[in-house]
Length: 409
Image (cartoon, rainbow, N blue to C red; front, side):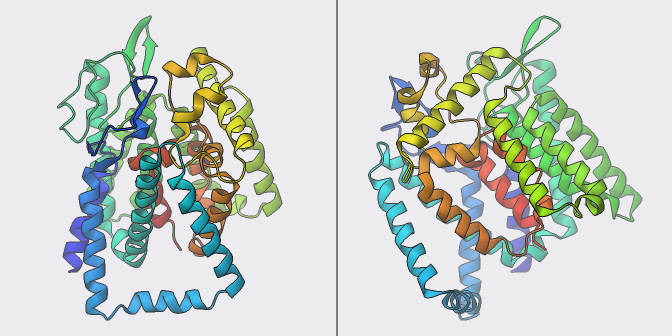
């Protein structure tokens, strides 16, 4: 059974950046006649592996007479009854709210996905010794190499390598709607790998490099060390080509923590929290350097999220429902042709779930991250503050979960 777990975990890692999915229905996924990808309920290729891991875990638990589940239940009953009662009431309100959302189907489907991720987190946490084995890091290095080579092919040929059935690769021949840049006065498509967007590819590469670097430094086998280093070097090149600002910041912060953690850990906690708060405010209000049209669109979306939060402060507009409501709150009609979530995961979460969602999220994080190396999570901040895919795209959610599990002490 251990070998089966290891095989599934390796397959899971390889499929993290895959954008291959099956659309269950397109009903209710249109805004002004435009099909909005974020309103589509999907079954992802990686879901096959995720559910296989969950089922295998339950089979193992049944064989062991649910020893782990009984242990967790016992731990839960030790919590104050008032806290349990309050959490139960808030959860009930949260679920009921999703039934009342304008696009209830995607809200409920996303809610079920969160339950799935909760079960997956339980499995990976229980099997974190397997997650931290050398073979896992080697598979991660191979995945980085694979995605980077696909990205390099896309960048220099401006063509897709295998099309959508190739792990969900974006069709680069459809130039409209793709992320582009200008090199030497010529407009070119940015590399996607097999992800949904260059920013997602950049996020995967940056966080993977941060996980691989400590592993590579501790290897004694020179061949393994060189091989991992080569994968990382090619991954760094691909990361640069994505032009993902959030991913660059994430890598920079991560490298700073890896090399200077002994000094940074001595900083007063109030200084760290204050710094994070200032960065959050800057990410919302200050424009980043880059394409002015792209930046102005991001600002419109973030402003819409803030207005939405003010209008629906307690319950939000419903999980994954931001794109269906954004036009009502945008200061410009430009968003009608640019229907995307707010590019700040925190204010997006507030707009969609309200204070209720933030309170539940805080309780959940507080209880589930007691053994987490919080400094190791700092590189996530640029991704959370400058993008949305850790909430809106499954590969982003899975990447976030995998990175957090890897940083459990």
